[in-house]
Length: 229
Image (cartoon, rainbow, N blue to C red; front, top):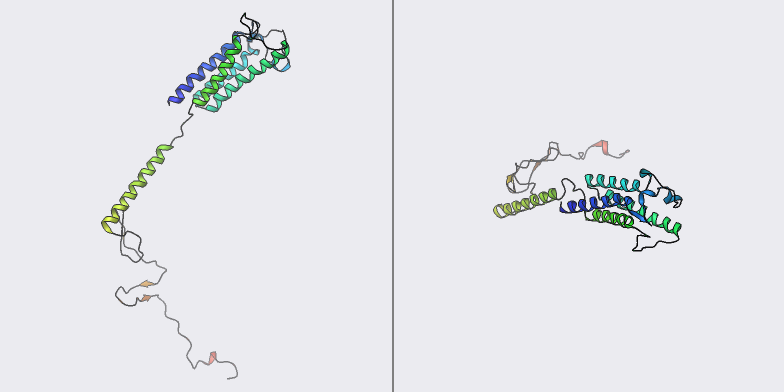
């Protein structure tokens, strides 16, 4: 929970910094809102741009993705927003360097301006926020496993107690009844499709199969003699 709160704060600051960057100077006093998005792919020109087709467009898109990611607690969406901001900023730096023959940074207001720094910082904060966030917690996760473990340990304790009180609690198919845990099982009934046991006394056990035993043919049975005898 705390990680999500900290990550959300960092993500909001990063998105706000990225959206505010086009309203500041990017290079030689020229603001980011004066650069067209298509110039990033075709080459930087001196032609001005309207607001919603300038560098503000990808920054606003990244901010919207960030808000959706925070609502859904999606680290992936927040990281994607950071990559969008950094990607367009770095692409602008490459194109501007090609058009000016190199990038410079001076203290008299020429060269790279605060807008580039704000965009780079905003993208970095979004990536840090995605790393800090813990994301959405799955329902029925760790708590359910702990409950099952506690129940299993309780069952083992009951079995140990029953062993101490009643001796061996292992299953015996010939037993009339048995103790298992805290429950007394009903008497064991023999299967209906097996021979029925009726003698419980000492000595050899007899079984009633419900069928007559097979008897061999009598010695004088002529039907089993070889032909010709």
